[in-house]
Amino acid sequence: MPRDGTATRTRILDATEELVLEQGFAGTSVDAVIASAGTTKGGFFHHFDSKQELARALVERYVAADMELSDELFARAEQLSSDPLEQLLELFAGLQAEIERASSNPGCLYASIMYERGLVDETTRGLIAEAFRAWRTRTRAKLDEVVERYPPRVPVDLDSLADQGLAVYEGAFVLSRALSEPKLPGAQLRHFRTYLELLFRPG
Image (cartoon, rainbow, N blue to C red; front, side, top):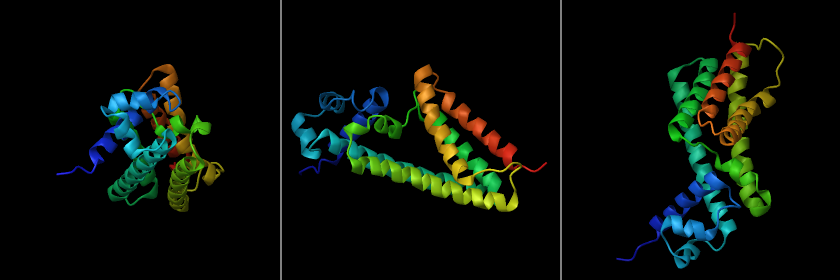
């Protein structure tokens, strides 16, 4: 029975993601991907015409998984409480738990790709930008619910605050890698949750 090649394609993407998180996109050669995936050059180029096409497919898969995780985290937070502030805090607690479960060497594919913008095409960069905008929009909507019930203790730009959670998340991966401290991203998300509580919690 002929095979559809799905397993080979998945192995190539899995191998690429691991290599890119470890050594960056520029440092990840097609030959290294082929060796790590246990395939051949013919097998690789059957699925991907170029390294840029590989990057696009990898980011598409990563964005889809990211959006699915976002849906799960928001849904879980809204199931656990009807209070918007508790939902917001639970959202970041869930994200923190995901990071801490994920790996002893955490990283984010978005950062690994965006640091090397000249090596990927505009379509791939656009996919990452849309993922960030989706996070911004959804977080801002939750913040709007929060301030209706809990006016902030000091004036705050809600658009900027929506971005801050993402900035903490992404920036923590850079610090974690630079300092070889895998627990750092989770700790930074705990600090951000504390900040949200100080900003909105009454009394």
